[in-house]
Image 1 (cartoon, helix red, strand yellow):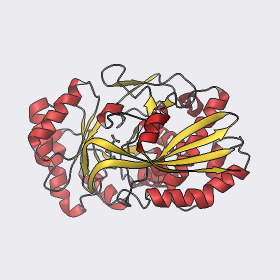
Image 2: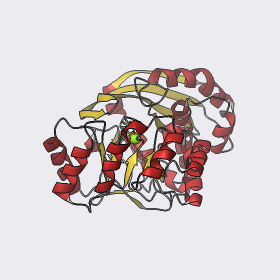
Image 3: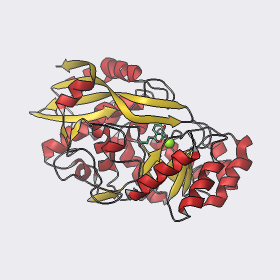
Image 4: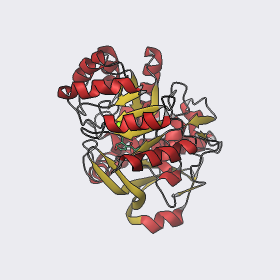
Length: 370
Ligand SMILES: O=C(O)CCC(=O)C1=CC=C[C@@H](O)[C@@H]1C(=O)O
Ligand SMILES: [Mg+2]
């Protein structure tokens, strides 16, 4: 594969409503739209780094810098046999996974298009449709949260994820169970807001039949999570702690989690995401595809990876309209049936880019060529 040109476009899109987690509130999403050109085709991906290093060590600026200085020049001068080559070539770059993932995923899209495959097929996906869930940020009031849950259940979403933090946890889960019962697949994401000192609070969550508690403890921990998992009935799911295949192997061996949330950007791209998926399948650990408030481009990649066999839990892959008044893809991501998103049948990510809408939210761009 010869990459003739790479384009980075920095966009800023307003979220339809603020999204609050234990580490802050997002009112808009800045991200890098990556386009890679070869043989008259274009591959697209999205860099999901945030504008401050609150989720991981990266930011949009660090990702752009690492890609510009160390990734793009090499990609433009190298003949790749396949997208899998990318991981080997750039394994020397420590962390900076979202920078690596943004270029690698775009190369995967280009590769699939050049082969006339859907991205799902190129990755070994098996599903023609995926069950999807929805992630709800921390709402100011319990009533506001219950109204949102009611609306998403009415749309048929197959998993409800709520954000929790100390003081905004048990009451929220209890209220949802009291109003909607115990059949609703409900989970809580703490984004590392707790420590082992909060054990009693976390144990109180055990009585509400959550399908998992996501990332309760430190973002870089697997030891204390193993101690916590031995105290809880509820499965722990790791998100921020899992940056690589090795992290996943160690967390599974230690018993730090019973479920893993795979995010393509967090683990360095689609090749690594697939390897973690395969390891988890071998070890009997179910996985699901997390979200990073992506535009339709990132969302399209999430749909493709979630079509792999062991993505058995609905991911945070909601329809475009949950976040965007208008998305930068055509068609937008929609629910083909209640709680279901169809895996596109067109080559690559299967969605077209709406350059007119990209231009509307464009802050600046740069083209890199041979
Ligand atoms: O993209 C989505 O729909 C889910 C977004 C979401 O829950 C998250 C995005 C980014 C960081 C966190 O806030 C949280 C997560 O940890 O999954
Ligand atoms: Mg999470």
